[in-house]
Image (cartoon, rainbow, N blue to C red; front, side, top):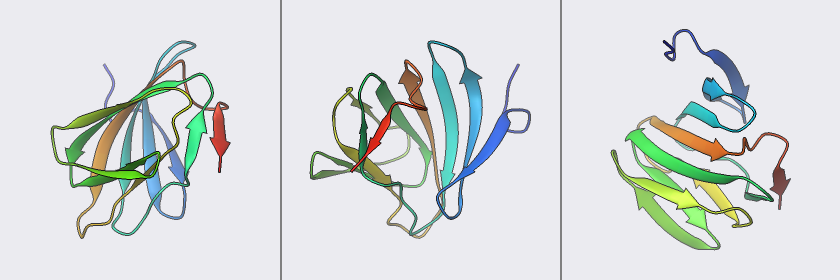
Length: 111
């Protein structure tokens, strides 16, 4: 069994947290927490495709210059090579799951 409490933790950006729920050669499942006003940098992955699924809060996901708002229990599939940027533009914490195959670490090209 794995949970946020027992998973490997890491920090990213200025104040964001991630927990590796699955970390294998072929699959990555991470739960992340993004405080209000925080975001990742715009980037794409050469090989990895990703699925973002919101647990709580509201995610703003910019895909190739088009902004999408994801509410709790909504998700979005981002194919490899697609420019994207996730941010929290709202007043409550954003909690979501990002699933990547193959794992996206080391496969990120920042713009």
